[in-house]
Length: 101
Image: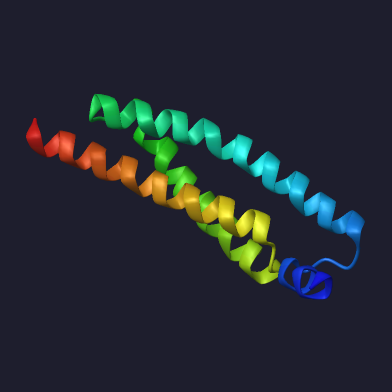
């Protein structure tokens, strides 16, 4: 069972496993700031951040996601995939707001 978990997470030791756990905890904290911003935008039904922020976020997020997939790093794959979804949703809200105006 341990070998299976190590293989799934691409780690070779208990120390590396703990670093993956620490990385996931850090990624959850990092993602939390986007979730707070996203929920605020949902409540306002508009993005409260400049549009360029979201375009840079999508570009950087997709590049980092590609890197994470190449590295087979579950911490960054999870974090970047969630981020890209949130960035796109905010651009969708901006578009809807502009169409309504």
